[in-house]
Amino acid sequence: MPTPHINAQLGDFAKVVLMPGDPKRAKWVADTFLHDVKEVTNVRGMLGFTGLTANNKRISVMASGMGLPSIGIYSHELFNYYGVDIIIRIGTCGSYQKECDLGDIILAQAACTDSNWPAQFELAGGTLSAVSDFELLVESKKAADARGFKSHVGAVVSSDVFYDPNPHSWEKWASLGVLAVEMEAYGLFISAQRSGKKAMAICTVSDSFINKRELSAEERQTGLVNMVQTAIDVAEKHV
Image (cartoon, rainbow, N blue to C red):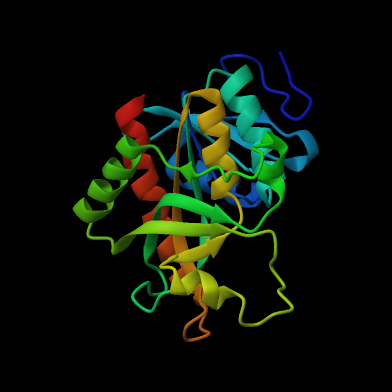
């Protein structure tokens, strides 16, 4: 039965969903990496697809939109109303560390946040830690290594702010060893923890706060392919 934000039917989604932020990127992933693809949801233009990998494993891909509230809604509905067991975020991030080069893959072991979104849990002054599933994390590292993709394991920060009026605010996170910034992992991890399900975030470094560089169009395409292939290798172990 459709939810307020997803118009798929029960069974339309596979047990594992890859989740980019951009609906057009979700379609690109489905068109590029899957066959026998079916569009299963399109509410508000937030596209979702289910198809078969090159190894004929059934997986889904659906966009999350931007930010913790958006991925919180979609992941909650997938986990709790559509029988999805695993969501793997696939997206881009900005590097805070010099060793995390453009095009590298970041495997998020945990997520910090500057958002007020966790306040909904009313922890009386406590802070809820958001962590990925350990099995998925290990599998992601093995998959990236097996394909020769350069990857880094560590914490990311899921920020509410893209155009920060303070050009130095990122430095506090970098000094604490945070690898990169993105906008959704914290919400996904907490949604999985609340639902008793599993989540992982695999991101491509698209820009660097260290040297102020960004991926070219060609470099971005290669980096995204490596990230998606890593995620598919992991997904296929669970379907």
